[in-house]
Length: 416
Ligand code: ATP
Ligand code: MG
Image (cartoon, rainbow, N blue to C red; front, side, top):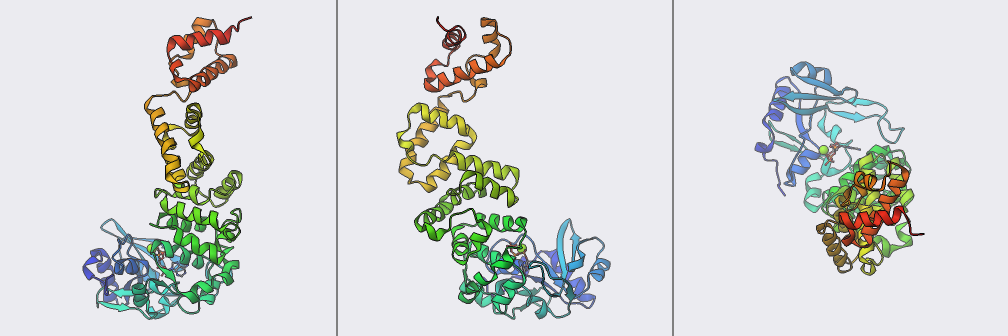
């Protein structure tokens, strides 16, 4: 970790924006998550700025701006095709909806702005012109110690905005930090405000947690503080079956780092219809939902070692070649790897052997069958072709034009 900000790391346009604000008589800083990530030596994607200048002044000072969130004091300044959010220092009015302050008060003092932020490590500002770091809540010390500590009284802060407890849990995974004990202890008392957080925001935090190197850190916190039960009531309480929950946590870390795979592993105990309803309600995209459900439904848990070759091929047909490897990766994170290695090899062998998985992939086509048997496109033809696919899944050596035509004739004119 760095003990100070490296001025050269701040993009030139961000520094120029701060310089222009200072020249106009205002204070200007880089602030929040970007300073935190920079000090941790992590890549910074967005450098957020804050200033004592009012939003109208910011808009007049720079030629290209976008009034992104003007009511909350945020103006986007465009420089060299890069976008920088510049937010006027603010304090929050009362929170009555558990999510957004009723009113925003613009302020002149950076310390007052930092006081409304959630965790001390997110409440550090840096003035790139004077080189002064503003850290009134001991954020640098907490960064060093790997601690997430609420700014001020954790119960009050969590009570204002229900998103904060979820962010706290998520940061334990994305930063690999621990919640400071008093901060964690305040979470259960704030769950009623978490209930008011929109599903979109819940999804966003879950996706950020799932991207972390070890997502289980966040979900373990969520389980023991009660966040999980609020976010997903359909999941059996971890305390009811701790061993199964431990298995889910191990699996979410062992899974390949795809959010959909990791969700399927973490939530493999949730019954499929409940899981689907939850994904819909939590506003996961149609693609995300379809992928998780394919994975969830196709997980070969139990005793795939005992499957016949035909069962392996039918499983592959159901899952599809594209998803098969992903499903096996998720399953491997849940089962012991040995029991799945055999299945993995057999699936790969079936794919390599070119086993047809649909009627369209049979070695004979519908037109040839119609011509030979004098049939027309009809449901009977569809049934006949599906029957042929089943026979091939039982025994792939039947997948030749001659053998299939023979089987088709038999099926069409059964012996009397
Ligand atoms: P991420 O790594 O997800 O970007 P972040 O901390 O940068 O994390 P942002 O949403 O980009 O999160 O917010 C920027 C800053 O705004 C935070 O670092 C924090 O200072 C403040 N902030 C964001 N959300 C809240 C909140 N719900 N309550 C208080 N302060 C917040
Ligand atoms: Mg950020």
